[in-house]
Amino acid sequence: MARQRIRKRPMAEINVVPYIDVMLVLLVIFMITAPLLTQGVKVELPQADAEAVESTNDAPLIVTVDAAGNYHLNIGDDTRKGIGAEVLKKRVATVLRRKPGIQVLVRGDRDVNYGKVVRAMTLLKQAGVESVGLVTEPADNASK
Image (tube, rainbow, N blue to C red; front, side, top):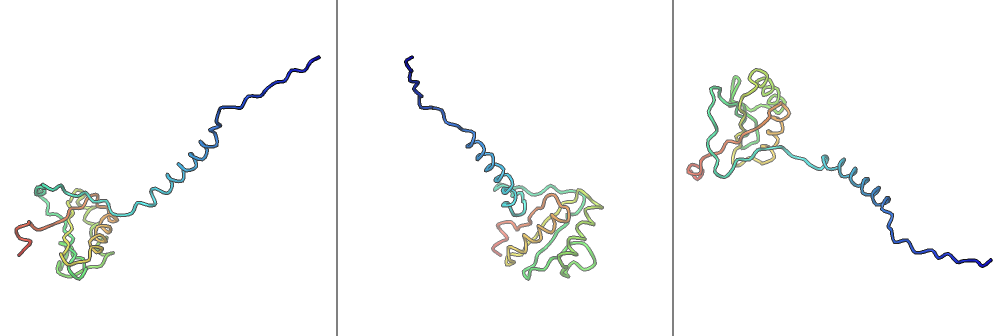
């Protein structure tokens, strides 16, 4: 009997299973690390043509950061006296429990370190404030 030679043709297909496995592992790594990379305080910035904030019956809660970096709250016995970070957080949380819809604003001195204003906003977020507004002067009065 004559033996027939069977020729094996080269396979033209690529096995993609290992590539899919690698892609799934990379996807899981990115899904886990992405939330850890985002840091900061969520702030809703006003548009360029911003209008005045709607007036409500309740006076807004205003947190002031003076030039020295001290925090002041427009409620309490002496509003001119600076308060600490923990006291600020506790007082704001108390006000929010009594008046859940109260508007919260941050006033930062022009010469204060930006980090102090961000720290105040972080403390407000920890106290349970959903959104924070920033108080500014109109452009006409800023040069005075």
